[in-house]
Image (spheres, rainbow, N blue to C red):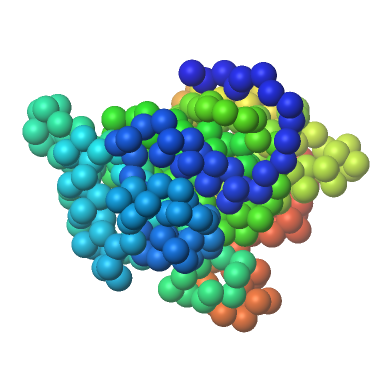
Length: 336
């Protein structure tokens, strides 16, 4: 089901919402298993798995060796045999070590075997900057995997969607890659009780507006909302769209907004070149919505640089609220 069940509003952190989703799945479906490095007694690199190993045992919550390639291969094989594995990477950067299994196996086996098999696999990637973890532990690589046919790629920005998208991913017959921004793990928000799903491939309008559209992903959604509140006080009405799914992308919601506002800013943390915002921009440029644009599209993405360790430099290489405000003001005032 896609509708949220009626339940009293309660607050969970983003991490707690993910844990609750995994707990519900483990308790209701014996095919679901968790795999990853240090997810057992240690509870995961970011303590998201918590104490689930004590509830379900090591046959269901399995620590894997320090080999992302090997662990990912086991997860793909488990999915092929009928299980529904959730594989956690300690950091999204470590996907680079497992690209053979993700890109050449998980994404392609259903196609290469004529639909005779599916790979119902979920992979979780703690992603993004802001923790001082430097260049090899702070990247946003969702565009890498979003480039690959056969994979679905999602980026929940709220605790509610973190739970709902994970539960939706577990019902999907194809591999779903979930990028979870590390800074969001402690963020709290309303999360319905029980089982519900957030539809994969559907964006959310987080704030309606009429003067310009801001399409954002992950933590940038919250920065865009903060900017939109400031812009509202200046008489500029910004519509904020939370993309939620990188692949498949919600074409209809984005294009409808651009037709309404005539201006577009894309905000994403991944490197600007060939990033998610490039795809959004091209999608608009190749559609009839292009005729509604009153100004050039602005992309705000990560700098052409590895993520620095220094906290001030780390902030400088990814978009911040002042950057969004500057872009929006230029668009609204025709200064681009």
